[in-house]
Amino acid sequence: GVAGLVPRGSGHILVDVNGKEYAQLIDKGLMGSCFYYQGTSKYLSDDKIGDAVDNETVEEGKGTDKEHHFDEAFGYFGVPIDFPTNTEGLMFWGKYCNKRDALLGTNEIMNDFIKGRAAISAKAKEGQDSAVAEIKRLWEKVAAATAIHYLNDGLANIYDDGDRIHSLTEGYAFIDALRYNADGSVTGADVDEVLAVLGDNFWIVTEAQIEAARDLLAAKAGLESVKTDL
Image (cartoon, rainbow, N blue to C red; front, side):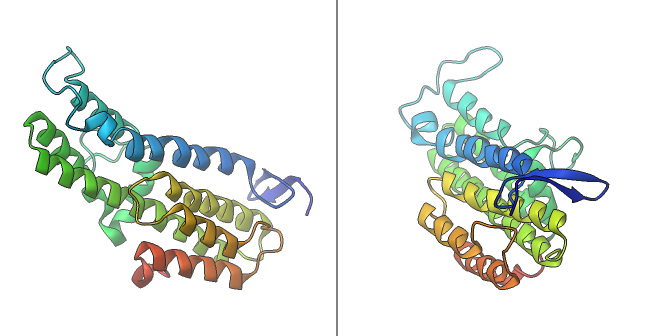
């Protein structure tokens, strides 16, 4: 119940009075509130790639405004242009997408990025809309599945303060990230409900609380069949 340094592995982590790790709140918090928001709600919105956005005037090195905005959404995902054949140097969401792929096939999102970009260049509205919907769906699946993964890690390390706090803080941040996809199936109210079940104090959190939060999130995200495998 005291903020400060908690042993973890060969070092320490810095936590607040409720047992949340500052570094993970910042790192994973920005992945949700900045990268995920910008990649789904902002640059894949009608304001950026809708019918009113210029898709005729080509700027050297950038393409049309609509093409460029779509490319910015891709940039927030954090993978090379030859992903998933190339998985070197994955960053942020791309790294976690690749980790979830074996179980959930999430790397298919790359094909949707390619299809969406090609559809914009071909001025094929139906193809663009279909690809964008799939990108948002799969990106949300990565976030929800990764949150569940870390809740499971928290359960596995329930008696180790450092590992439990580290895992649950990551899980907390990935759950919170889900509120930033305006077209996601998991709503802000759903996020608040799951976090309320998990509780706000990772010093005294119980196995029952973690399991209940995991199960509720899995139900809301359509991941019940794999919740114990993540």
